[in-house]
Structures are given as structure tokens and as C-alpha cells.
Amino acid sequence: MRHFLLHAPQRDDTPGSAYGSPMTKINNASRETQLYLHTLASSLACATQTPMPVFQISGPREDSPSAQRVRVLEQLDETLTGLDTVIRSKKVPPVGEPVATLGRRLIERGEVYDAVNKTYAPGPGFAALLDSLTVDAVAKLADQAIADGTISTE
Image (cartoon, rainbow, N blue to C red):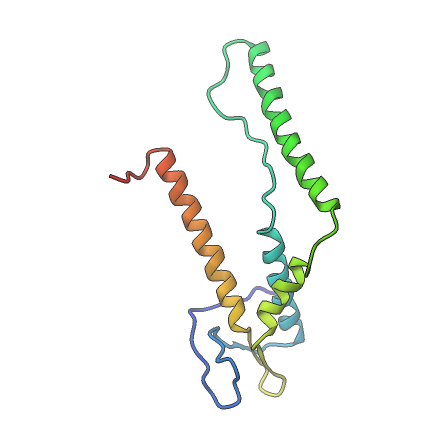
């Protein structure tokens, strides 16, 4: 499996570049590279659509084994309820464009693939998707740090 590094955004304002791709060109790129990044964009779009419930036992351990068992079963019930909700939402037919298609379109629009020079630059929508995912993750971490007292808002 190949891994690709995407560097800091740089504009490609060459004539014929309709959008001016903000992503760095990937050298020695093939159609596999292009398809890999299309799949990556679709996967990222789908992964951020619905949060999956995670089973975590929180809080200190209970003194008695039976009390600990009750607490674990309660938290397991909450997680399974959340999982049931996610599964039921997946059975509902999608309205409008599938999220995977929208993710792929973000990278396709404005992409530049040069088969002769073997270079590829994703469309500017891919940079926007990555930026928005980064901002969302940082905001979530900041909210969590404020909630647990790591960061003070005063």
C-alpha cells in the first residue's frame, strides 16, 4: 500500500488551471494515486457523517463486584442503544446525493492529472474538506478541555 504526504497548500495559477488548485502536486503519480485520493475523500466524508458509539467504562471502579457489574451493564445498554440508532438510520433510504459521492466530487472538481509528466493535484475542495475536519477536531478537543478543566475560559 502506498502512502502519500500532502504538503502545505500552494496555488497553481498556471494558464489552463480553471480553479487554481491549492494542493501541492504529487509527483510520480499514476491513475492509482488519483483513485486512492478519490476513495480517501469519499471515506472521510462518510466517516464524519455519523458518529459511532464507543463503549467505555467511565468513573472509578465500584467497591463490590455486583455494583461494578450493574454499572458496566448500564453503560453497555447506553452504547447498544446508540448503536441501534445508528443501524436504524443506515436502513433509511438516503435523501439527495450520497455522502461518498459528494466527498469524491470535492476532490474531482478542479483536479489536475498530467499523465505525461506523472503529476496529480487534487481539487481545492479536498483542501477545504481536510481543513474543516481539522477545525472540527480542534474545536471538539477545546470543548473537551474546557469541560474537564484543562483550559479555563476566564
